[in-house]
Image 1 (cartoon, rainbow, N blue to C red):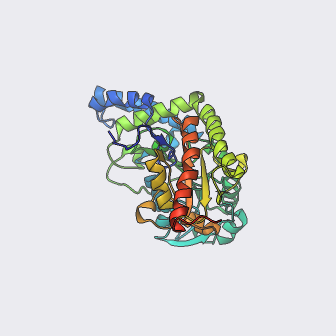
Image 2 (cartoon, rainbow, N blue to C red; image 1 turned 90 degrees about the horizontal axis):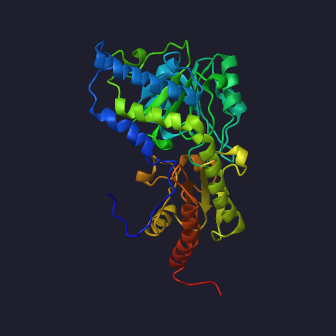
Image 3 (tube, rainbow, N blue to C red; image 1 turned 180 degrees about the horizontal axis):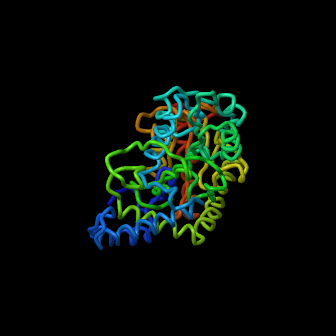
Length: 386
């Protein structure tokens, strides 16, 4: 157990990872002691195989896909990297936008890559994407919604225009899955990536959706698992947990949680807009509820660096984040915010999930003004303007 200096903690970093739901833990636990290779024809193996396929069906239903289109992976990072690897057998060139997750940007950078910029709200222009497409373009990446500022991308238009050009598309839906409805079949994309742990599922499990009829080389070879699209022994307990998570969300939890998340994040937006969080706190990304993911908000902070704000909030019992989830260890400015033309070193990301309540938001709204005031006092040498 973690030892904290305050008696009550308020976790508002669900966009990085969300606590595993009790129902998911309960669904996984029995399978930790089950022996049976799902690739074998004996009874034990076929019991496991049947359970995996039931879980696959639930995940497919959640994402609007066919069961055979679901390839289980270790998470969205593997899925995104695999999508790039798979597609680049068709050509050397990849198109990304500057707001993509680091795993997408870095896997694309191993090939010939064109990077498309963002506007001030964090949105990419479909015209700019198509201008970057070449005759030898193998793949266009586009997020469903941005993982830092929540802005929804024009994914449907980009996918449709790429299909007209005969170019494959990959959608990173890790930030969106479990938060907004996803219909892979209706979207028409070729590849789509998700991760269970961001929705309250187990860590170490995700999925890559591969459009029916698309034949691409696998990244992981050495076995015929996942219909020869991803070698390696299946993570059976995690797959069972992912399947249970999908069943919960399919049975109404997704809509209920999205509505609650939008209300909770709306309280933060309202507090920032009214000045209740203190001076110099502004919303980043699309301000419209219909233009953003419902569960997260990014705030710009003037006059203070993000790291001491994070530490001050943590000492007050509030866990939030700043910048992209994979750059914080290096304390680098956020590439997403840099692409938007805003100060990339002074931001906070607040995100809610299935276990969040108004008490968490209230704690954040109480703590932030005092943390900012203390830091600004320190920066001015304790002098207050007269």
